[in-house]
Each structure stands twice: as C-alpha cells, then as structure tokens.
Length: 391
Figure (tube, rainbow, N blue to C red):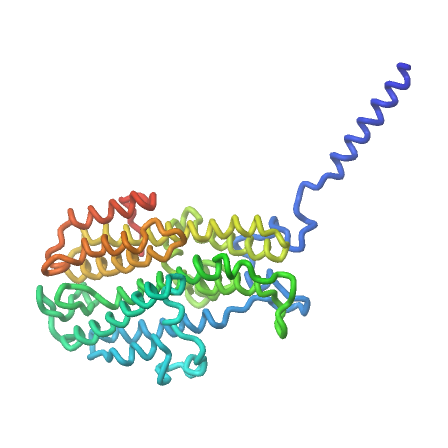
C-alpha cells in the first residue's frame, strides 16, 4: 500500500509539473502578440492584409487636416491684409474650389463643416457650425484695421516682439478661436465620439471590405488614428531637422503634454494595442485602449488650456497676453468635445463668458478673473492648476 501511494503521488506530481510546463505564459499564439508592440513600432508595418501590404488607410482624415492647414494659413494673413469671410466659408464648406492644393479641391466629398460637432444633436451641431461662421465674419471685420495698433474699443494688431496678432476691439484673437476650436470640434470629436464611439466600433470585423485589405472595424480604428497623426509612429521627429516634430494641430499639442513622462507614447501604444486587439478579435482589450485614448486626450487638452491661462499672468505685454488668452479660451471651448466631457458645453460656455464678457473684453480682465476660471477647469478635470507646458 505504501508503495502504491508513493507511485500515485509521483504520478500526480509529474502531472502537475507537466501542466505547469505546458501552460502558456506569453501571447505568442495571438495573430499580433501585444508583447511585440513598442513605441518604435511602425503603425503601418505592424498591420498588414493577406496581400502583404499595409491594411492601414486614412486618406480622408489627412485631407481634412490639410484643409484646416490651408484655412489656418489664410486666417493668419489677417495681420497683413483684409480677409474675406466668404473665402473662409468656402474652405469650411469646401465649395468653389477654395484650396491651393488641387488634390484637396478634387476631394469634393470631404469637408470640414460636416465633421464639425458631428457627435452633437443636429440643432446643437448647427449652432456650433454657425459659431465658426460668425468667427469668419469677425475676422474680416477686424482685418480692416490690420495696419492699426489695437487699443481698448478699437480692433487692430497687438505685438509681442516681431510677432503680430490680429484682435478685435475687445482683444479677442479669432484666429486662435478657429484653430483651437476646430482641434476640439473636428479632431477630438471625431476621435473620441465618432470613430471610437459605439456605432463605428460595432462595425463588421469578420469580412474584408470589397476591394480593400481591411475589415470595416479595422478601418474605423485607423481613421481615429488619422485624426491624431499621419505618421508611422507618434510622436515623430522630423527626419530633416531633429529639433522639430512632424505633428500638427491636436497631435502637436498632445505631444507637448507630459512628454518626459511618456504620455504621448502611451497614447500611441493604446492605438497600437487597440488595433492589434481588433485583429486578435479581443474586444475587451480594445475597449481598454479606447478608454485610455479618450482619457488622455481630455487630460492633455485641459492641461494646455490651464497652461495658456497661467502664461497670461506673466506675459510681458498685451500681445503675449491676448494671444495666450485666446489660445486658452480656444482649448477651453474644445474641452466640450471630450468623451463624457468633464467640462461640458454648458460649463464651457459659462467659463468662456467669465473671460470674455467684460465691457472691454480682455482689456478689463484681471488675474483674479483668470484664476477663477483656471481653478474650475483644474477641479473638474483633475489637472494641476499650476501646470505650465513648454509650448
């Protein structure tokens, strides 16, 4: 009996040892192992179709960002010439071949306006689109005084060294309201609420789209990536100048937040991991990455908004102050487009009004006024109210 017991015990130990040895401790059986992804992985080369070519495509996103670049560049001419609200509206709506880039003019199905505040209910979305159209009118009006130095009650330019900024009679730089506003209303909204939203993320992931090498779900995820960056890695140094970066708009500002702590790379890893999870049919893992992307984008924009407000208090002149204030307000507006926004549209409007509704606008604004708004953003978003980013 004793001998039998020993043999049985030995067999059990051997069985347990065998099970322990056979149990997988890595993810090498996955189609795209998560452990193989890194901050230097190429987004394009990591994901390929059965034909061996990249399955990543987001042409439409790149085209809309280029349209925004042309609109932004035209608006910035307002310090040297009178602007045309009609031309800006044409770029916004993509009508009358408004772009210098012929490729953009031929992409007639791509518009900025259709992707502005798209996640909002139709009436609210139209109100936001009208907001930008009104900004174009304000820019045209202010630019009539492009050669005049602004004072309280009179539009014109304010200067900071060699830099000039066009402002209206209250000191508002509408160029920043447009650029930063559309960073939120188009880029952030499309990422967090549209392409990573329930409808797009419920797309088919079993069938390859006809004539393509990706599934509909894979493509939607890539389109969300395309609104952040057009580059294979994020953030990406400019190969031609190692002191510069290749990101623009949302991608550029997010890069600047917590760079030393690796925040931009964390967002990139979430994009990589989420796309790999889609290939691996691992929706739980994908959903984890959606939450990371949404959260970090909102935090980044709140940090930038707070940083700009803090910088106004140490500005050396009105040019620097009004420019920084306008950028801060632009990002404050953009916060309403975060997923489940902590600073929603109503709160954003309230805080913007606190900064803009003085009789003489920015000319009357005090540091106490700025701190009161800054502190509310910090409390709502959990961002340090003393944050200053090197932008």
